[in-house]
Amino acid sequence: MSTTIENNETEVGNVIIERPETGRPHKGKVLAAVQPHADDIPLFCGGTIAKFIAEGYTGYIIQTTNDEKCGPTPSIGETILSNEREVDELAKVLGLNGVFNLGYRNHRLDEASPLELRARLVFLFRTLKVDTVFTFNPWGHSEENPDHYVTAQAVEAARWMAGMGKDYPEQVALGIAPHTVTEQYYWVAREGQPYNRVVDISDYMEEKVASMSVNKSQGPAGSSGSKLKARLAKQGLHLPALDGDDEAADRAYIKLFGLKAYREIGQEYGLEYAENFYYVGPGGTFVGCVEPDEVERYITENAAPIK
Image 1: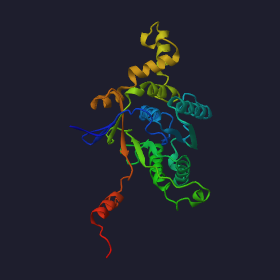
Image 2: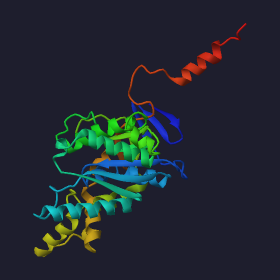
Image 3: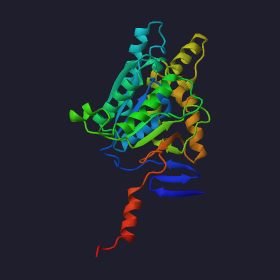
Image 4: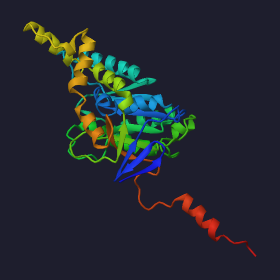
């Protein structure tokens, strides 16, 4: 059984389906996608980011590691450079305004100072006035990569501390006002991790495919089409679907083989393609808070004049 909550939202069981909205209803809002690696945003939220930008968001990428371990060349320096260039291009194809590279060592983020990482994120969240973040689930089970869980835990701590005036008061003294990040879209990165929101990305698949294709240094599909085309050519063969230049072949390969997971989660909820998230909205996860609306309702119903 499904229930309409808002014009663009439907509740199915414990899952909210978020559909495209017309116009630019989110104009003035800011998102930050915080990834340790160049392939994270394309895999987990490329379509949703494109949707949000089309609906009015301004957006940024915050990259926590230098990606030195993941690339096609034996040179660490060349690997860092190729990934950095591809993240810059990723921002362009998704319509984001810029990239902030924090530069921590790849696969070694757990050796970095958590206080320093958190302070840098607080500074960015405040300065950019971020309303919505995308990153790994800080409570996600089965996560094996320290870059993933360290990034997620730092984001989760920084996003609410950014709204506290006594945290990093030197920033506030310099005119960087406290600002709380109120919405979190946490990625479903490992099998069995929970989700409570599904975003319809059917109208944004070209942007999704482009974001995946940009990531040629380490992406699972970024340059696979052109490589397959070259391998078949040596055997005197070709696949008509891969005809055209290398970029066309790479995107065709992604459409043929790289979209299965997004098609499956979409079809489960009556959509063509979707991305799923563990969503936490305004108010966070804390249990036991006094809700201001409840207080005001009580006052309206019970307040009496002083005699």
